[in-house]
Image (cartoon, rainbow, N blue to C red):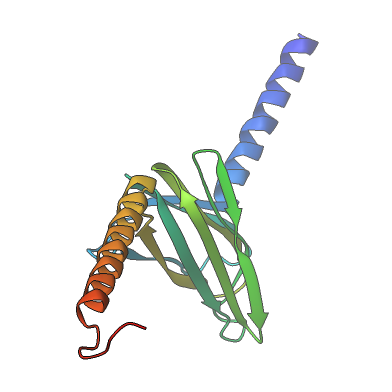
Length: 187
């Protein structure tokens, strides 16, 4: 009987701690849709009643070829009413983890992140932090990706450039041979 009561007490405490963890943390995952120029906006807003809670906002996207990524998020604290403290901004996927760089000044937080030569696949961009404003807070940003030319494309471009250079040199030599001064005798 003593073991049963003890097990019941442990189960109830675990259940309560899990419920309290879920009530204090705000977790959200969104899929990113790129426009034609391969950019997308991202962000989140937290309303009243979320003060002192922590959040994890994740943004997922898939790329089909080798690419370079640049992203930035900004949060502005407006007195004690609206504010966030972003503690981490990172990219993960395909065995790659890249962490952003924070620049902070007088209530303005700017996180920037760049990663290059990323292979195709599924990636997640995450912003983690806590809500400091009594009325909540928000952040916003942008994500841009650019395709990296494949090695065969670069090799073909360099081969074509070499061929054009060879043709220009040959033409110049041929024109030089035809434009000898006339009327002069070799010595």
